[in-house]
Length: 440
Length: 90
Ligand SMILES: [Zn+2]
Image (cartoon, rainbow over all chains, first blue to last red; front, side, top):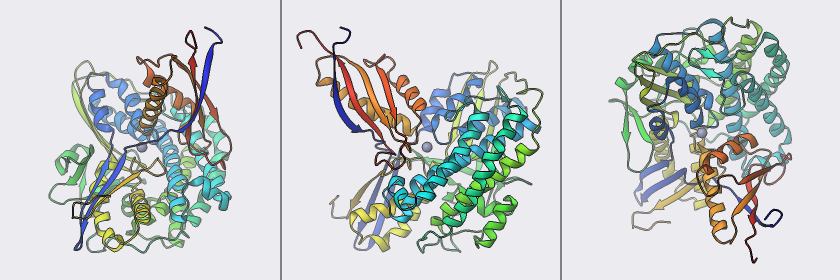
């Protein structure tokens, strides 16, 4: 049969479908109900992890999201280490921060340049935006590339990094491999600084969470660092607990309208995780350059305009570069790439700061190191109730918009939170229900 | 996870097209935009895993990586063509 084949031309655009749907019920008296349906993967992975060896957790969890695999890995290894009672320190700990810096840069830049900035400026996508703002798109790709280089070097590859293991890494970089990256990082840092200034000039809609009644901001807090891998779980309304206490304070509710779970703070309700929450609770811990820039641009904490999340993200990108350069500047290759680990029956918890917010993991393992329980609470499900509340508050003034314009506004508002559905350019199926049983 | 959804959509389309053709699909060619959030290597990995154990197992995947960030398809993944084994008598 060799050589006897026929080819058909297709040209079909592959789509990411069914990940987001927004149902709005309204009538003459106003917006009654807002339900956001998000397709959320961690549930599926919790089941997949059961019965697997504890050492497999970082590689399996990395596959939950192609944009923030490091966050899932970091929480997984910290959770396992909590169970086993080990704590990598020194250069190993610093390398993990460095890897996390790479991921923040990659993920934030993807969000800023491919999705959020085009939204702001009224372009359907980055390609269209590049025609009028070629420098911005070019520089953004340059910045993202430096993030990729970090993840590639320390994580072993750009996507689904494979070099992370419980206790440390499979292989640690040589001093010279890191210093070789410094120049690229410095150049990208300067571009990132320009990006912060540029994003401060974007036309932010005049909308603020009410000062007296805004959401509870939840983020990690560390005594000396802008939080990434570790810290206490704190909030703007006085919460201050360890990851081990997470499930005593936060609860998940299963809702019929979404495969995702809604998280709330017990007896307190919706809360917000992510860059704005992180910034509001940790502004004083930003790197010197990022902090000065925030001051000179008058980005104050608390930041209460959700649309400014793009500005906060770019500040965090600048911070990540400075932090990366600081770590590289004093790096000394550790003797061993990881601490020795030996399984025992135990349970462990960890919370880290994924680019889009707090990520919580809990694992139970048996004496042979088999995972018996895995629990993963992703940032998206923690913010989902806040996103719906936000839309409910915002929508009454906009319900007269034609459907296209309304969808655009909703997409943009949802993108402030960078939920895991935001990859596809036009992701939202909008279902309007006007109370007379008519739906469009 | 977006990638899983994307690949699933792609594979559904391949099955749909294959059901209209007499031969067995033996090759698939994709165009990958310069700004698509997935890399060719990553895309291939997901694809290979998704077709494992299905009628598409072993299908040859070719990926054209586009370099132009200004191309109108720069953010897209396009199923360009499908290659079928010719059955006897056709
Ligand atoms: Zn994602």
